[in-house]
Image (cartoon, rainbow, N blue to C red; front, side):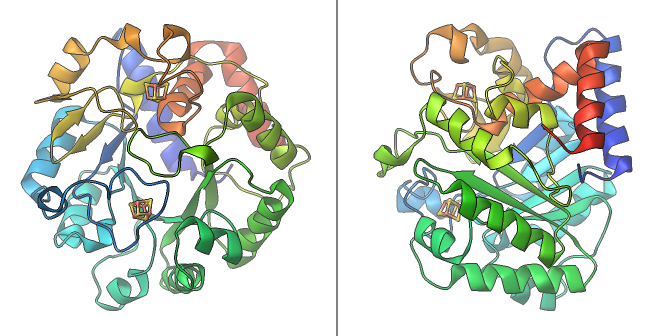
Length: 340
Ligand code: SF4
Ligand code: SF4
């Protein structure tokens, strides 16, 4: 595991506080989407399908901070769209770091070098770039439907590391992904010097035009088992080892979509960033008025049937870690041995 100890402790103490307070539902990672605009048009993306008048909109910094303050999670992830196109991204990150939130800025990194050179960000233990890379050059450029993006992203990663920033990667694996090539990708990222990697299977968005490439549950287990069996000691993953075991089919969890709530220009999205079942005006309203029993794999909801995406199941893995000594022991064991 690559998550720094201070971050691990911040999350562990937060979860313990929630449990002591008897909170049944609490957020771990707020997915803060300040805009849907992007400088790419990936085939599997559901965000850039919005009409132009929605793509032109963005949240104000004040709206973003009000959402963070109400939800008050230990970690804030800023996806999009492309957050480096958000005009207030520098001030937003600065304000979040000042609040001691662990911030992951999820970017395709096309603009990363340029924004670093403009001095928009300062290195901090609270701040990490999470660079979207779905594999090595050929695979990634194909996934994002444009040649040259991998090379730009790697240049951005090198520049961020050179300037002392924390850098992680996030990869979405779709049906047909080549496990051996992904293992090469893990080696390449470790050679570059990234702090850790995050992986997740893709989800079938109703808006996505490229439906046939999404993984079904069993094929996903097979893929992740091949990928993560015999992991190299040098591979570092910036996510719960129990979630990786879940992807491999070694564990079963139920979805906890309130663990990674999403806030964007429409409000608080129900029940998660993958599905559009309406919006709430506040986080409190989201928690209290969402029919949570209608979601998750055991709910019978066919939109959730094959879902194993991190936003629903990684919080379940973290919750499991602190739910029993056994969960805690299993997490420590996998963390120390690097085996899943
Ligand atoms: S980079 Fe991200 S937000 Fe942009 S089109 Fe691709 S998946 Fe969508
Ligand atoms: S199972 Fe997936 S799609 Fe359904 S609520 Fe959970 S995260 Fe969302």
